[in-house]
Amino acid sequence: MALTNPCAHVFRMIKTDNTFIQWTCRVCHCGPFWFIWECRYCRFHTCRDCIEKGT
Ligand SMILES: [Zn+2]
Ligand SMILES: [Zn+2]
Image (cartoon, rainbow, N blue to C red):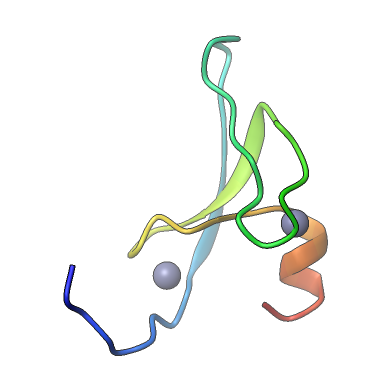
């Protein structure tokens, strides 16, 4: 991955009904969650609190 241009994140909430799949927020490292907000372009994972803080 040599891309250096910043991604204009577009987040969508994803969640799992599979208890083996969980995610951790990449910004504040809280979690794991069974739901997360994922950028549809770069697949960056963040929690809702971090989105609202303007990540
Ligand atoms: Zn992104
Ligand atoms: Zn977070």
